[in-house]
Amino acid sequence: MAQFKVSVRPYTSHRRPHLKWVVNAYHPSKGRSRSFFSTKPEAESEATLLPIN
Image (cartoon, rainbow, N blue to C red; front, side, top):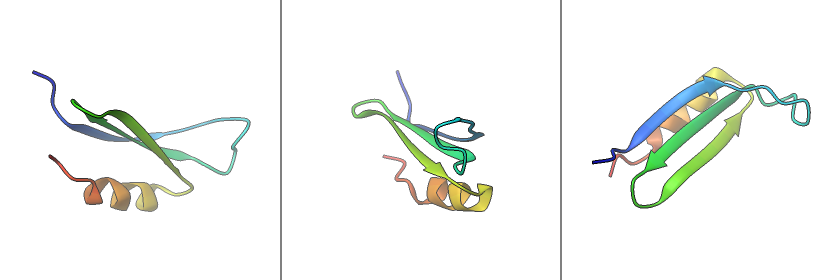
């Protein structure tokens, strides 16, 4: 059975060089969502706000 997963990872893109971190969230029924951030603390705070269910 698939689970809800959240990860904060470094991100690099030559098209968006100001964005350095990505929050990947996977929900079994809704699929994947990604949010991009300039700093690691911003990304981590967003990851803690995501609902687990």
